[in-house]
Each structure stands twice: as C-alpha cells, then as structure tokens.
Amino acid sequence: MAAITLIEAVNAAMAYELEHDQDVVLFGEDVGKNGGVFRATDGLQKKYGKERVIDTPLAESMIAGLAVGMAAQGMKPIAEMQFMGFIFPAVDQIFCHAARLRHRTRGRITQPMVIRAPYGGGIHAPEHHSESTEALFSHIPGLKVVIPSNPSRAYGLMLAAIRDPDPVIFLEPKRVYRIVKHEVEDNGEEYPLEACFVDREGSDITLISWGAMMHETLQAAEKLAAEGIEAEVIDVATVSPIDMDTILESVEKTGRACIIQEAPKSGSVGSEIAAEIAEKGVLNLLAPIGRVSGYDTVMPYYRLEKQYMPTVDRILDEVRTIMEYK
Picture 1 (cartoon, rainbow, N blue to C red):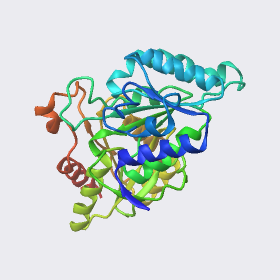
Picture 2 (cartoon, rainbow, N blue to C red):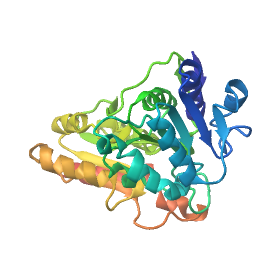
Picture 3 (tube, rainbow, N blue to C red):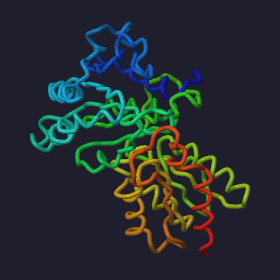
C-alpha cells in the first residue's frame, strides 16, 4: 500500500484494468508518448504498447466517435478529453449515440466506455480550461457522471467506471490532482457508482458537495465544530444519478442543508439536489436550503479566479445564516 495523489490513483486504476482486461484500450490527445498534459497516463504506453495506449489527432468528435464504435463491438475504451472545455465538439457523439445506444437497440448493444476529462478551476488556466459544466451531462439520460474528490475514490470509482456496461463521464478535479495523498492499495477493488459517501458525522446541518469543493467543505466543517456546530459532510461523488436516499436520510437527522459547488448556480446539480430535498424532505427542514456556488458568468481569468470560486469563509457565512433559524 502506497500513499499516492489523485492523478496517480487515476493512472493506477487504468493500469490495473489494462493489465487484467485485454478489451480495455486508452486513447486521446498526447496520452501516449507524453503521458497526458497532466501526466495522468504517464508510462502506460511504454508498458502496454501503442496498440492499447493510442495518441490521437486533435479531434474530440473523432475521439468520442471512436469510443462509441469500439464499445459497440465489445471493447472497453477510455477516451481522454484534454480539458473539459474541449469536450463540446464531442457532445453529438456522446449525447446522441453513446447515451442512447442501449435504448435504441432495446438493450442489444451497450456502451462500456469512459470519457475522462480534467475539469474545474483553480490552476490559473485560460478560457475553456476551467469550466465546471457537469450539469450539462447530468441532464442526459443514459450517462453516468462521476467526480472523485480524493485519491482513494479516484481509484475505486475509475475501476467501477471502466467495468460499467454504460457510458461514464469521469471528471477529474485538476485543482486537487496533487494536493493530497491517500494510502491506496492497488488491489482492483472498486467503489460503488451511484452512491454518496458520508465523510463526517454530524447532527446540526448537512453539507453536500463533490469534487475539489469537498476540501473547502471539510475545512469549513472543522471550523464550525470549533463554534459548536456539528456538520455532517456528504461527498456526492456520482452526480448522475444522485444517491438522494443518503442525502435525505442525513437531512432528516440534521434538519438543515447547504450545498457547495464550483459550477454556476442556476440550473445546476446543486439546484437539482435542493429541489429533491424540498420535494421529498421539506417536512424535516428547520431552515431554508442554502447554496454556495460559482456565479452565473463565465469563469474569469486567473486574477479573479479566487473571487469566483467558493471559499471556506463563504461556506461559513451561509451556514451561520442557516443556523439562525430555530
């Protein structure tokens, strides 16, 4: 067992499946010789060869279409989009084919494929490199959308994504690629998709987040504990479909909820979670549902990134407001 970063965990999970399943192939822009722009695929082409770890042209629609065709014939492709902001040329293939083939063929053809993409802000990147547009993909029936928050979850969820018979959008929060290490045993054990994780037990308020924002959320929970407010912290992990049972069970216990996300506020995954709580758990609520998010604007350039992204202080302010309701 070794302490590894999130990006190393992604690499280890892909390596495990390449080693143990000959149907797994990996391709994308610069994933082979260069090991990817963030080095997520470092060393994989050297170990598994150019026929299984393949450098492609700069052509996202082609990359996604290739994955659709391979998956339809029983292979298990892992396709990388270099940044989430570059994924839009591939949307036709993902939305109209990958997500629909099971339905279109009445279950005869499935799509065991993974589309990987580094996503989110916080690394001083330019336009199209910092988007958090998970809600677009969460809206499409037939797609699973997974966002790990730490190395151990990145490893287990990537294994589950590769093994899943349906297409999975696997979004990797690049801001936390290397900021924390976890002890992860490279044993091939997957984590369940479609399940939330309770990272901290609490009785006063439920904090709900995913991806990189889990780190600010957990820091806020520590500070709240010092004020006598015990927050329960939930990592959603799979934002489509969402494990609402775990969230509603927590809200029933605490009576309060606050959702923290990096994405813009309107029409977001956080909005859907808030609506589900309001619809199914309103009688348990002691206060309005809080939301801390990015703003309904384009992610700014790096000088304003910190003003755009939710901070620990913004979370604390929202929670204190919620706690004023008795």
